[in-house]
Length: 241
Image 1 (spheres, rainbow, N blue to C red):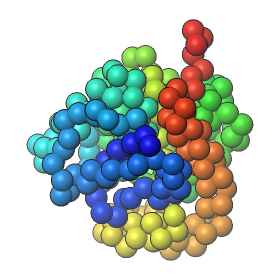
Image 2: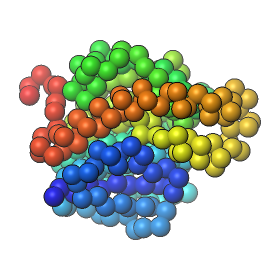
Image 3: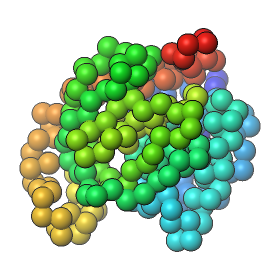
Image 4: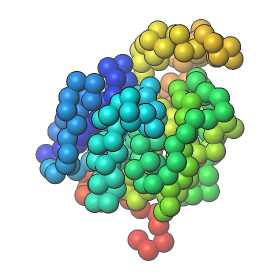
């Protein structure tokens, strides 16, 4: 059975619906808030990097980030399928040589994203609506690294998804459940209060009705990604394949 490594940064940001796509895999969790960072991906067929509240540029405050970036860089160089969510997408961009930095404002709650022309052709996103709502919780953003492709954008952030080789980074959360959203609002309440333009009650009220469409899109993306891992070849849309 093929093995997948999942890197989790904080207890309340788990894999959500990603778990359902991993039934045919052996899964190891690396919880960096308690575990020592691994140095090698030997024996693993894929890497999943979850979200977290820290910034990619906060290596002094979170020393594990330096080693984690090196690990992701090795995954990209070795063409190991890698999936990053939120912070995970930013770490992929940084590992591929791009800048990660604070945005002009935070994007928290339900927002539309639009696929770029490349996104509409991408094998993981093929057939998804050109514009659809996703759940967001971030203030940082990233540039597209050399050799990378921008797959989606939003009104606030031009880069919402990136593909670099066999690594995919999604700034938005395709994996969230209703319980996760509730917990994030509870845990991060102090972050929301000063913003003024974010209404946690409205987010909670909208979430049950929004999740079915999100899970349909997210489930399709995850199924395609891990099907490629299982087959030993992640689908590619580049001209030479």
